[in-house]
Image 1 (spheres, rainbow, N blue to C red):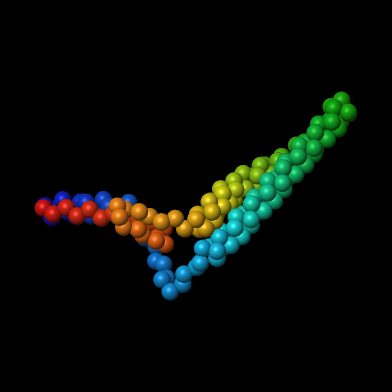
Image 2: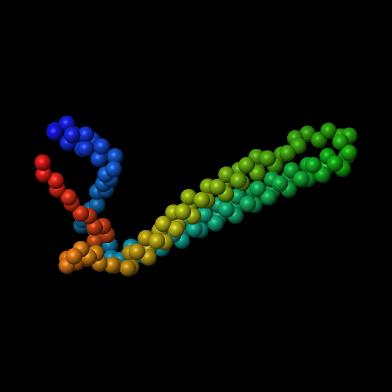
Length: 145
């Protein structure tokens, strides 16, 4: 029986998560809303800057490559043009920059939902008992053998 308890205890470690929260510092719902709104705006701004700069770099690389190909076509291939496709590194960097904006968009949407939840202040009801100002509701089940 002790072995069974040990197995259950060891297997439950990967499921549980904990975070130390300082109970002396509590923020009002308005402060939480302001914090998450500010974070959301900053993340969206950073994401749009990354998308815009990535698109500009990609388009610049495509223009550079097309001018190289046009110059080669203009000379009918008689003159060997060195370093054809000079804009490839710009295309790759622009694509990577645009892809790097995705986590910022995701984080911004998470902060937006947290901001709306901070002002709701809903109550948790279990039977006739009302729990106020709790973010999470937990239930304990005790089994005696």
